[in-house]
Length: 193
Length: 143
Figure 1 (tube, rainbow over the protein chains, first blue to last red):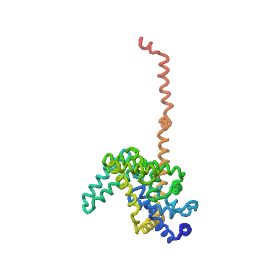
Figure 2 (spheres, rainbow over the protein chains, first blue to last red; figure 1 turned 45 degrees about the vertical axis):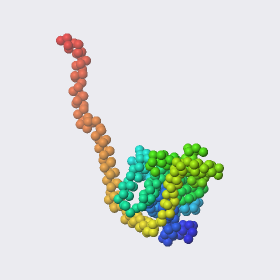
Figure 3 (tube, rainbow over the protein chains, first blue to last red; figure 1 turned 90 degrees about the vertical axis):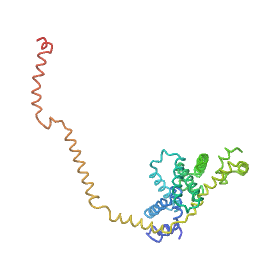
Figure 4 (tube, rainbow over the protein chains, first blue to last red; figure 1 turned 45 degrees about the horizontal axis):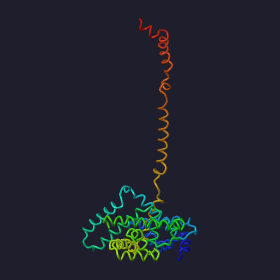
């Protein structure tokens, strides 16, 4: 079943079409949310809300853009709202503080579970460093980077989702990568990675 | 190429986004500088995390959960809020608000308009004031 067929049948209230929509685009939505919130459970929760929003507003959907573009937009907006709502008490923490605090938590957790191999702990520490560095990026850079890295979207596709020009997306990605590199180098110098 | 220049372009080197000549320069520098090579390796491993995350399998119960959440929300809408919350509560609060405003206005009015004795009070004050005019304070003190 193609996307236009799914939309058409969904507009007529077909439950099968909704199931097909969820199954086809589940990975896209969950991955996008995960790329922004960096927590699997939260990402799935947000993704569920994304599909419910699509189900409720399918009558408003015009075929001006692709269904996937619409899904990306909703997923990005909902994830950013989630981040905003959970941002309390984090304003005065530096990137290094966040990383070392999370790594300490991780080590405590891992030391109680001796079955885990050491490289897994190392990978988790790396993930923490990377997520914190991504979280520190400005909103637009974060969205562009996530869509580029997690979803491997082209500059053109990212521009459509974010409703920006291709050159703006290029600039956002360039600045995001520079900023990430700088943060990771700083962290490397301070031996937090 | 200096270490700083390599650090500035390392992420683009790892993503193969540099021009060929710069790619070659960075590669040569990394072969000769163990410190930069170590940082490059760290960066490569750290960004490699993204590839691992992307490969994570989707939850097989995802659709069931979406459906359950949707049905729950629909049920909540059908049942709706009880009559007390929907109608009585706003009406009660509106009445209380009107009463509070009315009470405030009443309490703010001057006391004399409520008592009605102000005419008498004024009359009682007049003789004293007239006496002050007739007998200045200097004369009173002289006596």
